[in-house]
Image 1 (tube, one colour):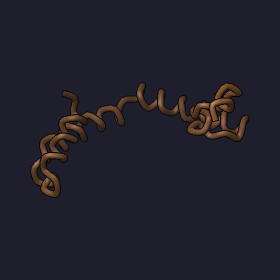
Image 2: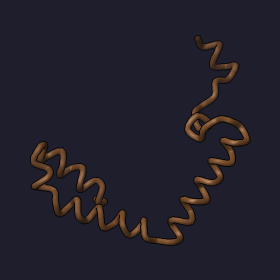
Image 3: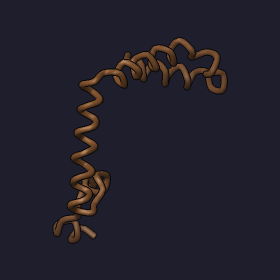
Length: 80
């Protein structure tokens, strides 16, 4: 089980007491995330992805979220 799943399961089991009961899982998850945030290679990868999406938006006017949605096709219209 990965850290995210462990934290999620703990929270589901603990309900409102998750703040007290899931400290260990929360600390492990934060430690993992911090390692990624401090990794220069990961930072550069995220930066390049952001710059590409920004460039695409400036060129097309369509956000990355909207570009990833499935576009309707002519065959989809016949099913309506």
